[in-house]
Length: 334
Ligand code: SAM
Ligand code: SF4
Image (cartoon, rainbow, N blue to C red; front, side, top):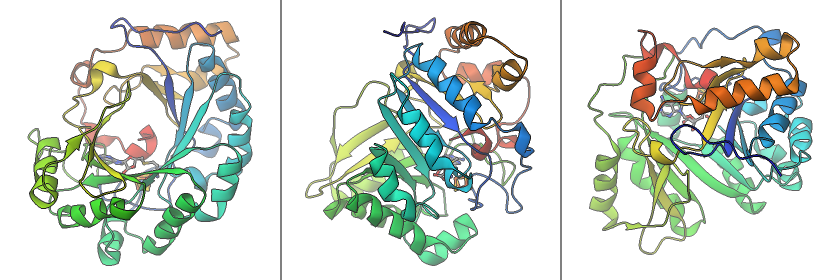
């Protein structure tokens, strides 16, 4: 049995988000500039062997759930054999991934076979021209194919839509409508400042915060019925009368959910973030490549997790002075 690790605020470590690459085939406006970000050299990315070793060690600290993200996970070669390796690790019983859906559809049957039960699919609009403007690529049909393939395979689908003032706020209702006849959860995410310098930092008073998103949905659909949330969940979920699926609202910038946060992030370069808003608290790649033993890696991970900030505001304050918008979610592993 693993020893469950807790931080100094009594929160357990149960979940790791692993960025398998910083590279991406889209250029979403809220994530990176049009010209892309400066990718790290290939050999600076953690290898699959290094990631498998880390996840095995994290399982010994109580982690049960792993989400693969990036960058776009499917642009990294041999992703599926890697997922297969992870699926064999004792203790890991919940494997999921977040994808933009452009390259994903052909791999869906194999994902189902490997036991991937849930996929987060990023989709900010159902309008092709607006999709092209936001992502700077004309790939909406491929993403919609992925949505249908996932549903056909019986994989749980959560749609992630970032709410951007003046960019896709006219699209929120049609996105929520996806759940009328489909068993999907459509989750609206507050825009965060991590855009790799794509545009100005998010204002302190976010124009579309979680309250306004809810009001906007309720003005159209009537009162939303709150649903119970799982421990550690970031989305407040609601039922809309007459819908098979659900809607969710993620207060990613307002940071209302930190009190039950049960996760850490490993960036594609092997940096550890114990909060989205910290600047990285441990360099795992240096440890692994410096020949650290399993016990040394575990001790470093445990120390980093124990000392994490109480919430995203404290984590942000602890950063040396530098704008959050210098970072891209593609490197952090959103
Ligand atoms: N490329 C994959 C994708 O887009 O699904 C996985 C990586 S992406 C960084 C993970 C999630 O972060 C996506 O759902 C994306 O919408 C979200 N994201 C990226 N930049 C964001 C920002 N500035 N604010 C809020 N969410 C953001
Ligand atoms: Fe790529 Fe995902 Fe960032 Fe869009 S949000 S640019 S798909 S990493």
